Image (tube, rainbow, N blue to C red; front, side, top):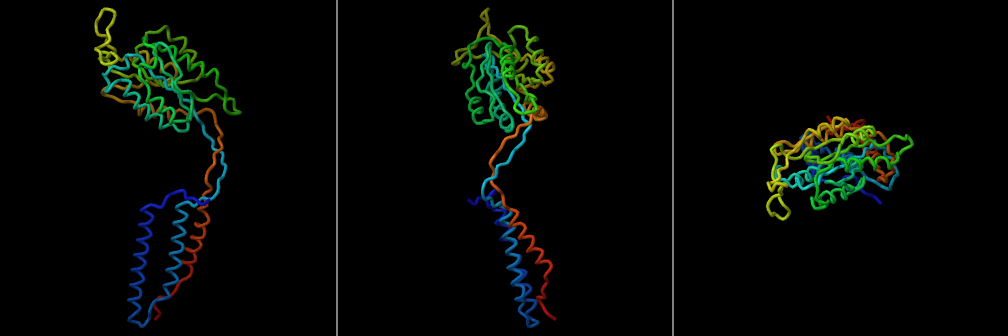
Length: 327
């Protein structure tokens, strides 16, 4: 079945109309010049037909006539990107408008759309970690999971960075190479949190993670001034053991150290600075280590045939000259 790679738009239609108008003006002018000499200039007519023909053929070639399907291998050097999102109650703090979590979700949705050739997965955590979406090429599914993120999805508790990183390690150990090269896929870990870590010693987990070659890019969300944490349902603010309002602050030091130890980078999302675009650039510069060969069905674009015929007619137009006005 014949199809077209590109739709006919107003630029193509405008070009055809302008060509017709200019050539019509040229023909009328030639006839006016020939009239005083008793000539009519009709020998220009077959040139007009020739030029309209190869112009039409060029237009057809430009639109990309496709007929049939062709199986083609596509090679990609992909990478795996794990998104680790903190869903502890402190992510409801409004020091980054509207809240830390809502702002981070909007930026992560943009990030996901920039990596169509890579697999992405989602892990959520507080003091426990859960795989919300396994590694996938399905961006629509991942975007759906991102849109549903809220702090009530995980059990209430203080932030612990060890469980999500150990969950990534478990997934890395269970994964198998995807090609005959036996090279593991390049892995990037994007950790989105306010940096308040109330868990156990993080160093052993980081050392093991660094040996796998995975690079951790940390995104600190919040402000150093901090903010009180709203209660669910708008019933005041969370309070500490002494009955005072609990204030959550961005703690960048452990996030910087974690990124440095794994060859990654630290970025911030605050009320004054948004470094998510820098994070996207850093991930783009990270090259995949394993080639994938995927076979895809593509429409067979047969633009060459009308293009070659148009070029032949253009050559004929150049080589054959006519005398419009004879002396």
